[in-house]
Image (cartoon, rainbow over all chains, first blue to last red; front, side, top):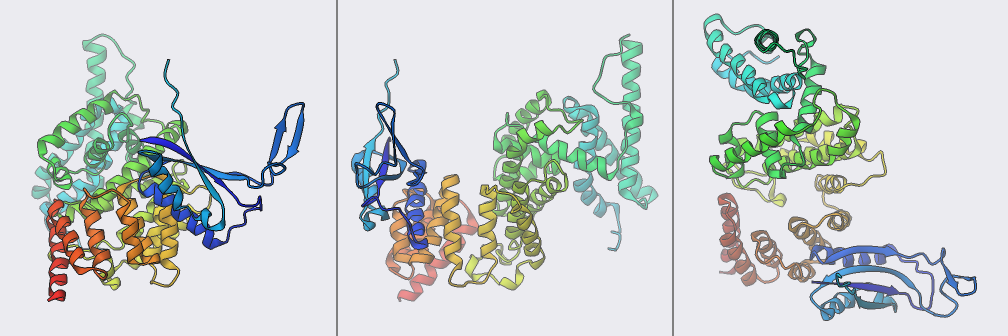
Length: 113
Length: 416
């Protein structure tokens, strides 16, 4: 079993303001993965307000918004046999219905020296 | 007041169950864990004396006080002999951990503290959870090896071996049983809660057909959890949540079994047979449990058990699903996964529930097929029967086989 990080991005950089129904749907999705014993890490939601980007030459800007329109609003780590299975899990995520995207990235296991 | 039992033969087994563990705990605290066998010998001798004298002289007015006095005297004699042996025979007075005999007495405070200390001594992380439960049953609840074997559906020899190893670890443990230290208690509290939780579940979900032993396991677990809530050092929100959970589950103990010992499914239970007294006490401890920020798995499970005591309305299964969602994120277990799926099916419909269940990869479990049988019953009777048959072939429990078989018969009659 391999670990895959699912990275959630919102559409349009709008602040995510989920309704109780949306929250319930997201929780159902997450718990559904946990019920298969395939959740490696429940991850975190990432704040849109308390966000800065640090650039070279001591430049600090507010948020990640200036250059990309959609921003990362959270991640979880799942267990899957291969990337196709991880993609199937991502496809069921309710964020897609709201126009968001889910990026699937395999975690590279460092080889022991 | 209840009428006094007529003969010592009726009174003794009851007193034995109640007082053996208490007296052993008090004496063990006196002698230290290394000498637990000495403590047990003195208690056994005390009961032997009772069986010899009571039939002849009659039952004393206060049987428990009689037992305490005899045990105290035997302990003093033992300590006296020990001192003589150490000083006169061996010529040395070793620094023993045993306390001078004068300081020794049985009273409610000492009994409660000793039992609490003993719970923490028994729940030694060096022992496996199964071994801790066996040890708890033997030392804290005065169960015989036969009764423990019956509760676990194991052979007596297996239990004996498990207990021998566990007792060796107990004797070698450096746990300070004399003084309850806050740090030691904090360190072991999680283990203690888990062992009591498992002890209760062993009784509640046990495959053993012996209804009396199962009820005993539940009430013993509740008695020990109650001890935790009565001591300031252990009266945590988790302990209260655990006791609330036990009260709610315990309230249904009588209603979930028919006269032949067959399981009655939750929805078919006669709700007037639920113990309102235990539900009220469950509410009390759940309120106590919710005074802090902590939401342990006991909080979540007590919350689910609370909702089960309420009548079905529109929001009920939403709440239960929500709690199961949180529970499965705290800790995965196949049972939680299956129960969550049941709640999911109640909220989103059985067909959605079936889809959710198919993802679980629990086809090896009887409970999975029992759930699928239940969900398919209104959707596709043929598939429901297939799943129930599979569940029957997988379960080892005789009463469960009967319960499932009954459903198969009911569905077959429906299709004809």
